[in-house]
Image (cartoon, rainbow, N blue to C red; front, side, top):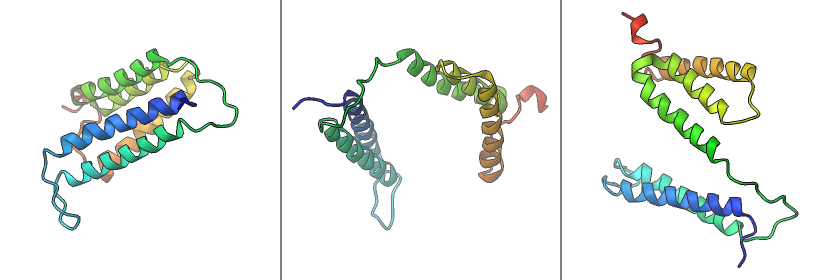
Length: 153
């Protein structure tokens, strides 16, 4: 069998790997039953769904499709910047507040794409700030600083 779509093949392997990883680590918690779920039940079900999805995508990568353009090389710089932006958000949130952490996340992630422009990125950042504070701050009442601690004393 010949791989017809390398992108789907890689995505299928990634989904299978993520499903396997979380499936193994969910076994450290009690599963319970479907009517009385334990803390490991939900992560295990998500891991199974992720694994099944990965298997479907992996099998479909071997099916010949209509004329497709071959995928280009992977943009590792972009992947690294996206991962770095999420890591930076997690590190900044307790110290600088939600406002600065989201701005850092959005603008660093925007640098990952050559197609982004400042006006759209700024509008996205404002929208995410409004929605984030509304959903997480007021809707779910999560306790996180919105402004840097220096402004809240």
